[in-house]
Image (cartoon, rainbow, N blue to C red):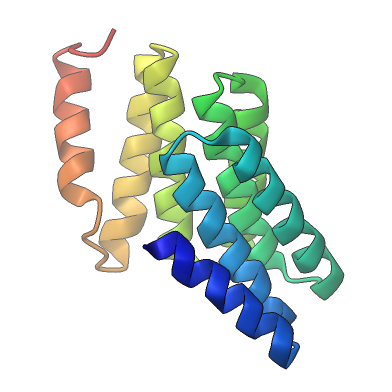
Amino acid sequence: QAIYFFKESIKISEKIGDIYNKGINYIHLGEEYLRKDKFKVVKYYISNAEKIFKELEDKLGLADVFKLKGILSKKLKDWESSDKYFKQSIKIYSQQGDRINEGETYYEWSDMFIFKKDVDSAKRKLIKSKKILESIGARKHLGEIEEKLEKLKDAKYG
């Protein structure tokens, strides 16, 4: 359902010449296909979004692209690329003052370390995510963060 509406939104964006929203919808489509593990399709949408945001010189759009690349690389167990993309994304979010996306990216990054069974790094990223999200009153991931920290404390990952 969401995929249909994002594709329709791209068509509308093209008709009215709204390249920015076209890029945003490419990111959303990439996220939706990532949930379905359709990695080739995800790469297609990431590539299109990246071209648009580079052309627009939109730093936050590029940060979203890097975050999505980090999540994709994490799912593909390409730890080096995942690490690189999360760092790029966080740097931009931090510079631009986008605290919620910065906090959410630390949260996603922690999962990479959980998959790698690097408990200490996972804890550090989760704690950083928690501090950022608490500081702005964003509660979206706080319950999940607490749960993951408890599991890490009890070494239930691995």
